[in-house]
Image 1 (tube, rainbow, N blue to C red):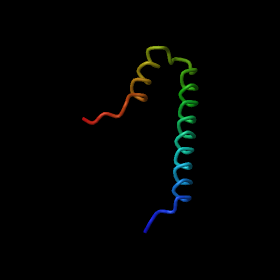
Image 2: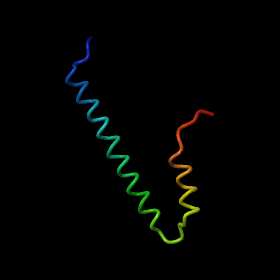
Image 3: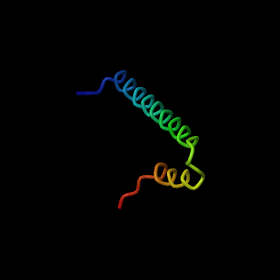
Image 4: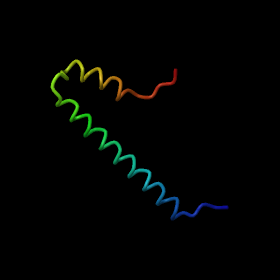
Length: 58
């Protein structure tokens, strides 16, 4: 059975909106984390290295 083009379009739009919302939320929380006392530049670098590295297969 062929896919309904309208449903497929709306699915893709919703998927993209979800990605944008979750990315925005994540970046906002990360900015708040950087403002916390005791988290200096070195700790920020360590966190960024873990959270923002690309997915790599082992």
